[in-house]
Amino acid sequence: MKAKYIITGFAALALLFGCSKTKVIENPEPPQSDEEWLYDESLPVPVNFSAPQIEVASKASAQRIDDLAGLEIGVLGIATEPNEAGSAGTTGETHQITADLTQDGTYLPGMKNVKAVVNDEADADTKTYITFKDGEDQNLLIYYPLSSDTNYSFYSYYPYNQNATPATADAFTVDYELGSADILWAEDHAQSYDNDSEAGTLEGFNARYVRTVEKNSDSQDADYTSNFNFHHLTTGLRFYALSDSDSPNITVTGLRIVEVPTRATLYVASRAGAAYPSGTLVPATLDDTPENNVIALTGGDPDSPVLNVTPSQETPENAKGTEIGTLLVAPAASYKIEVDIQLNDTSEPATIEAEIPVRDNSYIAGSMYSLSLLVRNAVEVEIYVGLDPWIEEDVEDSIEIG
Image (cartoon, rainbow, N blue to C red; front, side):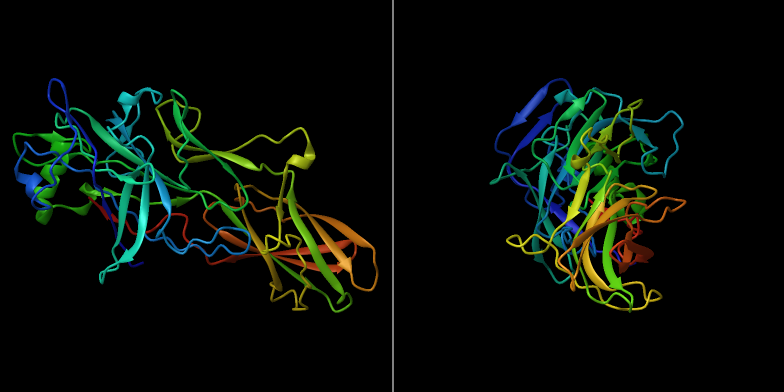
């Protein structure tokens, strides 16, 4: 898989910590060159990020994402500590959050749910530039504290929510409506780095770590630089309709998943001992009112939201038919659906209930399943399940950042 790169840029606000007290630079002068801060330790070290291009084949009512260009992602920089086990090399195991996530001091200054806007301008090297924003207009230039006595890890998610705040001291969470949101998440932890100098072993992302790694970049393994590896947290269900030769005159007028959570909470970052680890998508409990536990497909035209699909008559072996639409939902072992059909030779509509076949390993996040509904008559539907190309659950190639 060929890695594509997105370079993150920042501009305009900085908060710096000195060794013994807080130092604030209201209008920092931009460096004379990109490498000036590497050798002048009186200059702040900028925080730089990038993210991979993402191709998602979602269609119809589910939001289509071809890449990150133009999207808004959220990024958090959070103080972390190395695990006692010291299991370097595995994302999510090298550092853990121990501080109270409701306290501002837990976050790298300027990086508490900061919005990153991915620009749609690309150069000849297929690099896409990212700008971090404070509100709609002000760009951010964010620096590591100069003291380097705190290590940071980074967490990112999509879609961005400017109102997201820690629900408790244990977790920073974001709530989503399910059905059309392609929910993405990534984390980034530093590996311990021994540069064979008087600095000793450096444990995490801070000014000293970044300077040291960048100075030795020619001889460094890329594992010591920052990486974002996004995960898809929802499951794609793409519906098709077909009819057998005995029932050609059928139109599908509606389809919905029932007895399913319609909302979910993403645990973007969780401290040690929290109920759910970072990167967990937790579906909401079902509502006491069954009518509220429904995610419906609608037509593509906002002014005509009712489906009106005449099934094709492909054979079941081909297991596709006329595409109805796609829903992005929480992973589950199976799903129940209701299909509204209209027999064209009668005025009587009908609703058929069916259950999508159970999968031993459930319908997993990051996969797109094709569900062909073979409508035999006004009371019978058979469902054929296939796996459509979408994207691997993990992006295989690490993308260099910083």
